[in-house]
Image 1 (cartoon, rainbow, N blue to C red):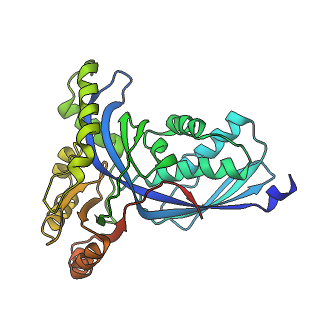
Image 2: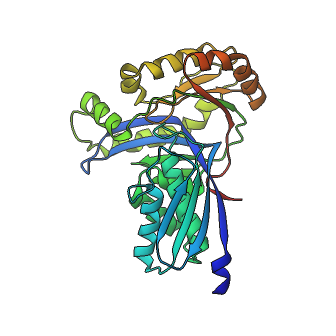
Length: 311
């Protein structure tokens, strides 16, 4: 396999937002039963993969605030593949980081999925989608979503996926204070302490909530120029504890053409939807100075039809 040594794989690794996040309850395995709609957006990291013959996984990045050691999900993912499939090769991986860390945008999960897909091609493993998703679910609850991405229903702890078909062309404005990060595990723990006083055992209730989201989820997002509320149960605890989130939501709610606004995931990133990307760009241009004065980084994004892609 002489050509492998020269091979270089480049991958686009996009963020996601939650268009619905419902915590049904705490499961006996310690995870939470969820009902979500997740959507990829075109704020993306970029990964480059090159093969090496020393068997080591070497990660470098342009981000100074990121651990590049064995606790990084990219390194964990690569080592899992090596161990599971007895791979002798190593990989040199470079991460160009654009998705903020600890932001509720699942940048780390996206990077892990990108690593599975990238190394599958770099090392000629020929793993199918089902196998990639199975490996992804052992690494983290959000990671399987990114294998196919786009817009999907996500059930269980996030690993039960159902693809949705949509032609939404909404524009998105994201706001995040660069000095604030939120721990997903701590947020779930706080939510659990406040709202999940017993373990979830009612399967009928779970199935009813799933069916309701299947039947009505996309209808609820077809705004037709009406202001609607996006459900994010975790916002109940994060907004109370985090002035950055409270203020971001207030700022977004005041934007003239905002269709709806919410926090993404466990926060602290908040977002607003607009009828199209041009409307979002105009709103950002008009309010950029205000956002900066209040301490927020801001982005305009569009929805993506796919998750991880080769470039």
